[in-house]
Length: 180
Image 1 (cartoon, rainbow, N blue to C red):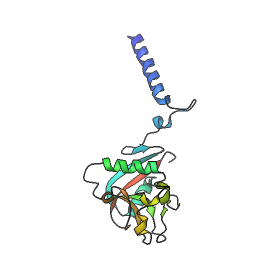
Image 2 (cartoon, helix red, strand yellow):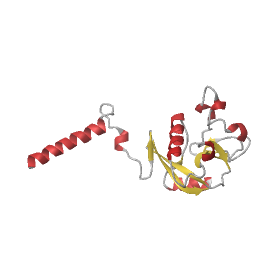
Image 3 (cartoon, one colour):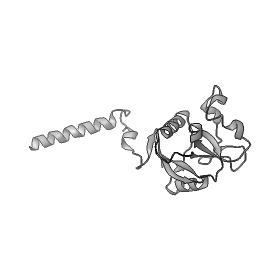
Image 4 (tube, rainbow, N blue to C red):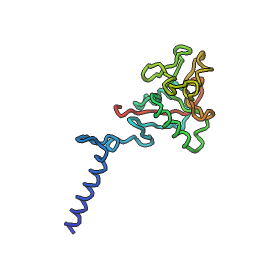
């Protein structure tokens, strides 16, 4: 019985070690296998995301995320944007009746969009470098670049970005970077 238990332990250890290090570079642990997202969060690349069912104004959502040392989601790559949109389209239930706040705002200076999380100007063209007018991300600015507001992923547009009055209650997405 002791030999069987020892063999089982060794087998389990080898299997776990293999799972953790299978995709890791030599001498490094696979970060995704080691670091986990908090309960309720979904991982994509180096961040974890939580899609909240509560509805807050943009400033309230910003404060809520910051209270837990998270940020409102900042869309920095097309892959991340597609992941977020894809996840939103798979969510079912009563809490997808409106949009989801992001960290984008033009409230400080009308027509000048920035990410409040890193103060970077929002580069809408990066999401379709060959033809920005066909990008669902950049197209919204054609009619809203002279208005202040906050950036949401709106259900009515297939979760494309849209300018929304910052005081409108919306769901929101908090992001937690692995460095947080």
